[in-house]
Every structure is written in structure tokens, then in C-alpha cells.
Length: 307
Image (cartoon, rainbow, N blue to C red; front, side, top):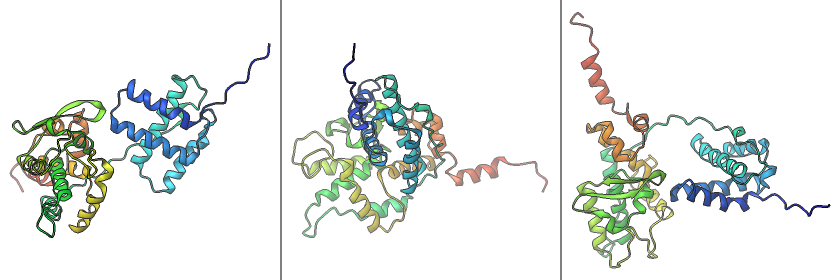
């Protein structure tokens, strides 16, 4: 008995929404991870084409790697893209039962040990001082005050930018100087604020005339997004004359290194940053304080009293 025509294999773009739903519901990954996966899949489609998933070959993986190298993408970005692709193929094979390329054939480069870049205390002051708080008519410069409050909140809490932008104004407990946030891996944690950070957040909230929940609002009245803040970060870095790539994550590194240099135990730094494992904190920050290392060298590396 003849069988009916078989349906053609689905393309990458057709499966992508189902994969993202799986990541959100079954794996319960957070919104930031979902955004990253969605962006990576679109880039993969652009690089190798919107292929039927069963037609993807090892040559397509090589093509993807070649295109990333040609564009100067670093090892960390390659890891993100290839890990996304590998998990996508695993979903196609194990959840949808499709005869796709073996995900184990997608080799991922090792994550390099990166130098931690941070701002010194002087560079922090140079950066924040160029942010305008008043206009030429001596009126409140709303975008400037909002940006200053955002920067101070990052410096005074060591939060990730996604965590900060997800906060509502009622989430911050000004009395106890803390807030609950949904962090990496969709896990809830407590973050703490310095008095200086709370001062600037208070100043920003005082000029707000709306009753909308988000802590940080765009000029359109919607929650401030990542794309809204890249331009001011670039502008004020240039005005401050800083060569370092001042971005939200650099301010997180800045807060962590300041804790370290001021003598904060690394275990406490782990909790403040919201790292799941202590070795993550150690990998990034131990060894940065050369002053303490030199003092320890002079104190502990001795062989007796003879010269």
C-alpha cells in the first residue's frame, strides 16, 4: 500500500521557537539566557543559512567557526555560539527525534583565562563626574541623573546589569540596604547597597513623577533595557578620557576588586557577587592584589636570620 508524501524536514528557524520554549519551561533558564540563545540562533542562520536541520553537516560547523574567526570574534563568543548550537542539535535529536548531526561532533574551544579589567578609584570619579546632572538652564537633567544613579547602583552593589534593570522601585529596601533579585540561572539572591548608591537612587526616584513599577524607566515610559544604556556608557567614557572599555560588567569587576583591595574575605566576595562556586570568584580575583602579595612575600618567605 503506497504511503503518503513525507513532510520535508524543518528548518532552523522553524524549530528555534520550540527550542526556546524548551529552554524556558523545561530548563527554566532566565530571561537573559533566553535572549542570548535567541540572538545566537539568528546569527547561526545568518552565517550558515536557514538549513533543514537534518542537512546540517560537520562542514557547516567548520564554516560557522571560520566566519566567527574572520569577524574577529574572541574565544568567549565562540564558546557561547557553539554551546548554543550544540544544545540546539541535542534538542532536535533527543526531544524531536530528528536525525541530525551528532552534537558531540561540535567541539568547543577552552575558555581562556582573561585578565580582569577594572577602574581605579580615580577613574571611577573621572567617569561619574562627566555625567551631567543639570541642563544649560540649570534645570534637572533627567537622563543624566538616571544614568548616574544606574552607575552608582552597579558600583555600590556589584550586580549584573540584567539584575539591576529587572528591579522594581519597591524591591529596594532602603532601611536594610538590600533587595532580592533573580540572578544568573534564574536563582533568587539578596544584593546589598552602599549608602552612596542609595543616595543616588533616592535622588533619581525623587524626580520621578510617574507611579510605574520599574526602578529605571526609559524616556518612553517603558522599562530601561540594555540597548538604552550602551550609548551613554560610550559617550561618558570618551568625555572622561578613559581608554578602558567602560561597560556595566566592568563596573561589577570594579566593585569586586575594590572589595578585595580593602581586605574583604574572598568568601564574602563570592556571596556579594552571587557566584555559585568559590572557585569562580578565585579564578577571577585572587592574585589581583599585588600589594598584599608583596607584603605576604616579605613576611612569610624567610630562611632564618643569616644574610
